[in-house]
Length: 177
Image (cartoon, rainbow, N blue to C red; front, side, top):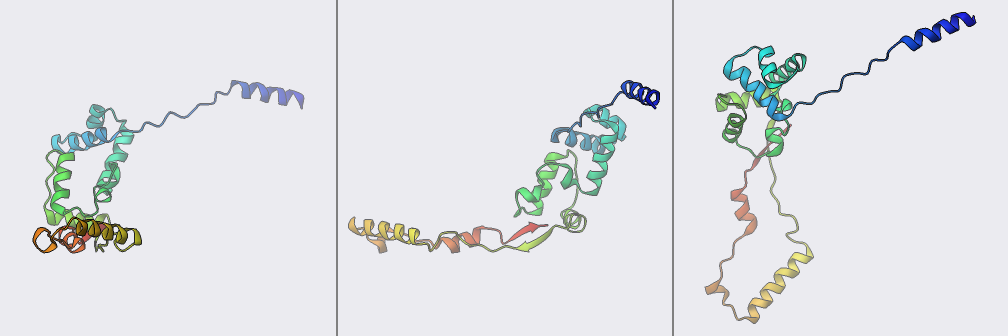
């Protein structure tokens, strides 16, 4: 029995434990360059990956992820950063990322709605702290200061309904997952 155990110990000493390779994370510039090379120059995946310094297996994974949903490959999805983005602006931002990228606004909307399950929702506008006691007190103090300075409100002042003003400036819809 001791001989068997000794031989097993010797065998285990000879076994070399291989550590896994370090995972290489590719930055956004590499991914954008890789995808634009494939789209614009029409290179095959292996050649485009070699030019960008991406391993072949990672390149195929990135390309599949891009084809399944290009918002998830790149950091900072366009509509997550700016949910009130208009489709024309989204198209321009995609053109900045991908040289030679062409898509119609209707095609982009269809892609966003069907493939990525992002829908356009009605948003609600409201101003925080509009009727809190502190804000009311500040308004009262300003009006008191103006009255002490004998400001003629009917001739010297223009008052703007802030909520109504912002209601007309802000977009009423936003993109949501």
